[in-house]
Length: 207
Image (cartoon, rainbow, N blue to C red):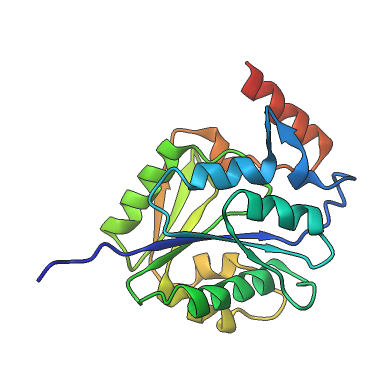
């Protein structure tokens, strides 16, 4: 019997209000691309079966940018109050539209994580494919970064996350094995929360 390679579906929560940045950060540009476009384009270069982005109803400019870049737009009927809620909405969208099997995986990447090198993604995807029942998380030196690939069955565990705890609970929960993938690339730690973060990343990319 011919084996079928499991699919990986990327989900991008993008419902934040950029309060520390002081402006809509996902529409800032690095080179000729917005931050959200740069992220989507990088994901499109590897073995990702679908890319879904959650955007608030009152953020039409970001909605238009997501559609222009060819990702699947998810607009909830209310504003998610925390990341775990956004992730739950995105996973429900996948269940309804992509029909994932229990062998598939979902890749979680924050929208404000502008640099996801294809070489890093390929290493992470290969590592997860070798251990598809485990969570694959990149680690640079002693710190964990992004993105993280979860087995599809981990989606069911969102309901088990205790109140006032975030998605990191899934990494600490012993019922799903975790594989820390050593990555020799500091960009897995980069995100854009403040103007200083954005300026630093722009400077690094210009060097």
